[in-house]
Every structure is written in structure tokens, then in C-alpha cells.
Image (tube, rainbow, N blue to C red; front, side):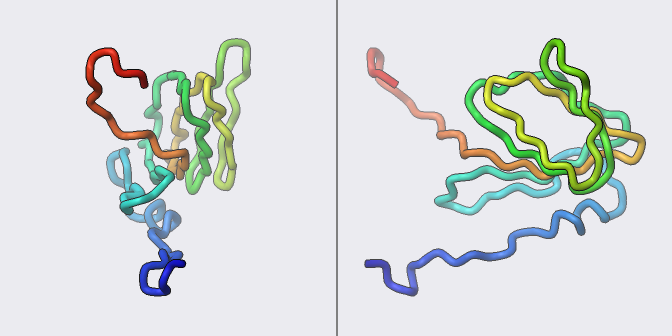
Length: 129
């Protein structure tokens, strides 16, 4: 049985809206989940106006993306029409899908959550994964 002193406690980690409302800064990661023992990865990312995340495919992880501020366009796989993103949009990016993001004229700030990637591991020759 876990003692009350060792039980993990829920806590507020960041205010994504406040990060998005801060004076414009160059794009990049504004916040990331860094707590030890976590099972998830999460980030708040800002793309400057007109900048993009190039098309890429994520073979292993589903990603949940939530638009905190601004607008942009989600580019999808071949044959799919680009989708306009506005504040409040929740987007599921299933593993195996190809996606890209392009920020609108006011930039795009979004929050992502996905299962934590396992760390790199040194293996001996011939050892199975």
C-alpha cells in the first residue's frame, strides 16, 4: 500500500493561454513536460506567422494537438484536403499519418500530447528489441 507521503499529486504545470498571450517571440517550444516518472510527453509550441512544420510521418505515436491561439493549416496525407485550424480546435494525428502545419498571419500556438517515447537503450549484438 502506498503511504500518503509518496502518492503523486495532481498539479497545474503551465498556463498555455498565458504563454500564447505573451509578447510575440520567435517560434519554438514555449513549455515542455519534464517531470520524472511521466508516461506522457507534452509541449506548447509557437510557430511564427507564415512558418511551417514540414510534412512528416509519425509511424509510432498518436498525437493530440490543441490550438491555443492563432490559426493555421493542417496538411494531411496524399489526397486529403488541407484543414483550417483556429483557436480551440482539437486534432487527432493518428500514428502512421503524414501531417504538416503552417501558421497563419498571427502565428499558431498549440499544445501537443502523446505517449512518451522510450529512451535509447544500448543493446548487445544479437539482442532482440
